[in-house]
Amino acid sequence: MKLMEIPNDIQANLNNNFLLQQIKLCKAVERGNGKLLPISIPKNREEVVYRKNGKSIDKIHEFDFATGAKIKTTHYDYFNDKKVRSIDEFDMETGKLLRKINFILYKSVDEFDIETGKKLRTINYNLKDESKIASIQEYDLEFENVAKIFIYKKNINSVSIIKELNPETGKIVKWTSFRDNGRRNSISEYNSDGKPVKTLYFYEDGVNVRDVHKYNQDGKWASTVRFDRNNHSKTKQICSKSNYQNVKELDDRTKERMAKLIDNLFKKKNIKFENL
Image (cartoon, rainbow, N blue to C red; front, side, top):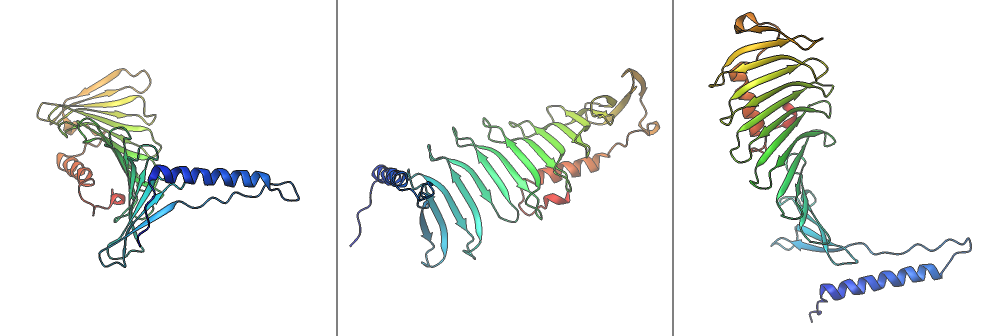
């Protein structure tokens, strides 16, 4: 005979009443040293979902004992039900998904907006060391596309590159690189077609501009202006790239390869982030 299921609201009241009884009991009984007895609170209720074979675990839903609200769902690997594939965490009040932790190839965490349910950001961790962040993607809620990408350095947990995108077109808007000490190294700005307009190179302080590289309409290098470090006045304008030796300019092919590599990091799961 199948037992009648208790509605969630009634179950929640029963759970709350149980907790109140436990608290009263705890307060009423004292040990000889005057300390209260510990409250015995049951663990969260679990619901196991098996695969079609009836043996392998597909997922486990976890519910808050007091309210009956779902707080977590753990998904297991199809070929090994001892291995966790992903974990969903829910808001207890709204029941909406808060974050999703993935363990496929590398650890990543998707965070969601509680109001709209849309993705806010994705945090990717180092393939070999889960304590280190490899990259972070931030999403635009209106267009639901990536708006900003943070690439972290391999050996230290600090940002190496910030790539800003137009979420509507997917074109790059701004590229900022940083030194190992966290100070800015350069900032590149792009037009609506994704072609470079100018690049600012900074002194070691990350504040004062050392050089400004300017580009023509087709994105080709045009000229460079150098600024004096002490009074920040313009000292020299160089119109011939071959005569300029102070800043090592990346060739177009290298820049294109770097941009494609970063873009591919968020399209292909088999890319190793720590190889940047």
